Each structure stands twice: as C-alpha cells, then as structure tokens.
Image (cartoon, rainbow, N blue to C red; front, side, top):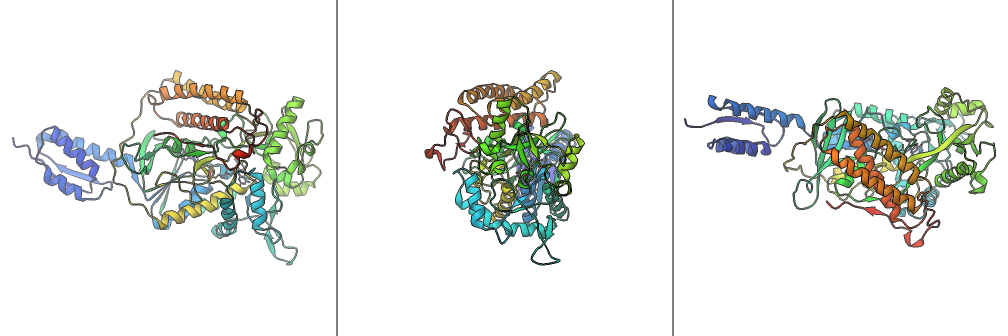
Length: 607
Ligand SMILES: Cc1cc2nc3c(=O)[nH]c(=O)nc-3n(C[C@H](O)[C@H](O)[C@H](O)COP(=O)(O)OP(=O)(O)OC[C@H]3O[C@@H](n4cnc5c(N)ncnc54)[C@H](O)[C@@H]3O)c2cc1C
C-alpha cells in the first residue's frame, strides 16, 4: 500500500509539526512534506490538528490528536506573567494590562499575601512639615550604611505620585480634620520607629487589607487580566536551563494547578516575580503561610544573583499567646505612645537607645531578646493603657478586637509580645526598574533587593518600594518590548510516588528547618551556630533532592525545597559577612567593619 497521509492542518505550532514529522517518519510515512511545510507557516499559538489519514494509520491519527490536545492543555501563552498577587504583582499587572494579556498566578486565594496583613501603612512625604531630605535621611540611618542612596532618593521622591494613583484607584486612607482649614479633611499621618516625622499613610490598622481590596477591584475591571488562584509557580523556564546558548532569557514558568494536580508551562516574553518574602523559614514569624521565599529560590535556581539575605528583620512585637498564630502588634502602637516593659513592669528601652521604644527595629528586637534571656521570661510587655480607651479602640480596631479574642483588653492591660521573623531585606538583585540579570525576568516587592533597605528596613518603606518599583518596571517593559520566543519548551516531567511514609519526611523536614533557623540563625548569631546550621541544611538539602524528582509535586514539597534553599542562602550570606551591621548581629564580630560598608553579599548559582 502506498503510505500517503493526507493531512489538513490549521493553527499548529512549529514544535508540534517537527514532532509530527519525526513520528510519521519513524513509522514509515515519508510523504508528509506538503502538509508539514504548510503547518510550519502558521503561527505557534495553540490550535487544532485535523488530520485525515489512511484508515490503516488510524492509530497514528489518534496519537496526533492526543498529542495536540495534551499540548494545548499544558501550555498557556500570555504577554506578561505575574507570579504573586500582593501589592507588587497587582500594581504591575494593572499598568501593563492595557498593552497585552496578563496572567496573575497566585498560590492561594488572590488576597492572601503579606500585603493583606500590613497594618501600619505606607511611608511617603505628604505633609508640609516633612521633606524628601528627611525621609531619605531616616532611611539611610536605619539602613546602617548599606543603602544605595540614589535608589533611596528615587523611591522617596516618586512615592507621593504613586500614592496619588492608588487613591485615584479607590484606596481609602484614614483622614482627620484639617486644623488650618475648618471643615476640610487631610490625610491622617501615623508615626513609626526610625521616622523623624509623622509620614505613615494608613487605613486605620488594616492598611494592607484596604490596599488589596482596592487593587483587586481594579483588576476585576480589567478584561486583559486573568487571575489563576491556587496555581503554584514551581520554577522559571530559562533558555540556559533548556540548553540554548547565548544570552540567558526567561521564557516563563512551570506552574502547578494545585486543585487538578497538573503542571502547565506558562509562557510569555516578560515574567515578573512578585512572590514576597520568606518569614516561614523561621519557626516564629508575623508572615502568613504563603511567605516561603519561593521567588528567591526560583531565581537562584535559574542563575540570578541574590543579595543580602542575612538581613532578616525580626519584628519586635508579635503577640505572645499559645493559640495566636503570627499576629502582629503594629509598630504604630509604639508610635502612638506604647511603651515596652519587662514582665516585672519596668521600662527598659532607655538602656539601649535614646529613642527608647521607638528605636529602630533591629535595636528594639535585640533589646527584647536580651531582656528575655536575662529574666528567663518568654515575653515582654507592650503597654498602651495610659492612652484613652476610645483613642486606642478607634486607632487600632483590628489589634483591639484580635487581642480581645485572646482575652487581652489592651485598653486595660499590657500586651505580651515577642520578636518574630518579619521582613526579608535582601532578595533577587534588581535595579530600580525591577530588572534582574536574566533578560525577560523582573522582580519587584519583598522578593527583590534594590538597595533601598540596606542592612535594616525603615518601617513602612516596603509597601512604598513595591508601588514605585512596580510602576517603573511596567514603564520599562512597555518601552522596551521583548520579542515572543519561538524556542521549544519541554513539558514538565514529574515523579509518581506518593508513599505516605515519605510524606512524613516532608513535614518533619519543614519543622526541622524552621526550628534550626530560629535557634541558630536568629536575632543574635555566632559563627559556630551558623556553621552548625550550614551542616544541617546541607544534609537536609541532599535528602530533599533525593526524593524531589520521585514524588508527585505538591505545594508542601515545593515549599520545603524552597525554604531549604532560602535557609541555605541566609546562612551562607551571614557567614560571608565578617561584621555586625543592622540586622546581622554576630557576637564573634560585635562591631561594624568599615571595609564592609556599601558591600553586598551576593550569591549566584553556577548554571
Ligand atoms: C503582618 C505584617 C505587617 C506588615 N506591615 C507593614 C506596614 O505597615 N508597612 C509596610 O510598608 N510593610 C509592611 N509589611 C511588609 C509588607 O506587607 C510586605 O513587604 C509587602 O506587602 C510585600 O508585598 P509583595 O507584593 O512583594 O508580596 P506579598 O504581598 O507577600 O505577595 C506575594 C504573593 O505571591 C504569591 N506567591 C508566593 N509564592 C508563590 C508561588 N510559588 N507561586 C504563586 N504565587 C506565589 C503569594 O500567594 C502572594 O499572593 C508587613 C508585613 C506583615 C507580614
């Protein structure tokens, strides 16, 4: 029989046609040239193959259909991929959406993010008594000599314009009566540690929730944006990883649909990492469960440089209660007069810093740590009972209600508090426009390290940084569009094992990493403890690597791999810095070393 296949093809991709050709040749079909050539002319968007084959080749036709359908199911093409739906991801998505199709991939429900839990507010110069110069100076001082001044200046100066846009989008900040213009309102400005002026815009004590509401409302009005909830970014797809030579370029990301258990390749010329921080690497944290450092781990695996990961900010005041999970008592409570005391009721911050309870966060956290070690107590107290109850309830309704749920009336009794991991000052190295070393890959928000925070973030500067840099990143990619890639992207290969015995190992390793990071790589460090932590993490990494490729991917396993990577980066960075500066306090080098001022610790994996 003459083995001729008459094939009509429409909208078929190049990768499929070459695969088709190989498969057909493999089984002896040679006269397919016309059909394949025609197919090659057509763009590479997902489509449909209609193949009419000789009845004896029926099996082959089915194989093609399955192949095509499978490819259509596992590949999603966009103009922009945004990993994360906090302030950074949503702000960027809204700005690029008028010019292309945007996928927002987010691993839980769309509001679940660090942003959603921000209480204090956004720092920006909006009052006549304040100035850019003062905000810059406060930021540099808090950053302990490691901030990049040009970055600080740009972010501080662009802040007010971005805040105005947020207000125009529907964000409602708290206001108060303007004392100089009767009947008029003005923004109510809060004060926080390290700020020399009142400059924190807030929505009572639920600023982050209001930001998410306003941004998500705007996203829902934008038809070009598709939000993928419960989709988990696993790894970045880069040209280098796929073995292509030339400039390393990000082509998108492999993403797990958590509900269906299926992995897709999301493909686009531009990918934005907006995955937030890594508080969950530590046993005690103010961060919600999503904060597992996925973006930093992904970028590191892809070969991007990661900087300053030793600078983990511990928030001094997390509620201490056996059943309260990571509830923050905002710095604004101290800004409004709250005072730190020992459990014996004695004020202690005057022994540590002239600003007392409003000293920079690193100093307050270390002071609390030291007082707890001295007294053997599990917590210290934060007292705001001297303020009128009405003021406290009105200014901090969320904190008041939450504490009340745990039996603590903050208007009548002091709040038991402990420090907890809060903010990642380092991250994926970017410039002000969110550009990383990998073409097509941007990073914005807590995942990124721009140089704004230096060795210690000034309170409420992080939401500001995310807003400003998301805007700049959007402007940059809109002004310099990258061509669509036509590289062949392989499908995700996954193991199949689900052995319950092994799953116990996953949860055990989760706990082990978080505890060892808390015990050995916490607020006060020593070389010996860091080296001990390094050894353990290396062993854990090997174990995780051993079973990673055999298992069906689940979010628990993926997060475990990521927290192990981030833990390794934190420890290695801390070991690489032979000094105490800002948040990195090492008893073996108790002072700052001038040679290390303005020196970042940069780690980059050789791919
Ligand atoms: C309790 C608390 C209070 C705070 N208060 C303030 C404050 O008052 N002022 C201030 O400036 N800062 C504050 N911060 C810090 C600030 O909230 C964060 O730095 C900021 O919100 C980070 O925004 P982001 O968009 O970078 O990340 P996030 O808001 O954390 O968003 C990250 C997003 O990425 C998603 N994600 C993560 N990994 C993946 C993955 N693998 N795949 C898919 N999606 C993923 C998450 O689900 C989430 O949607 C606070 C933080 C906390 C925890």
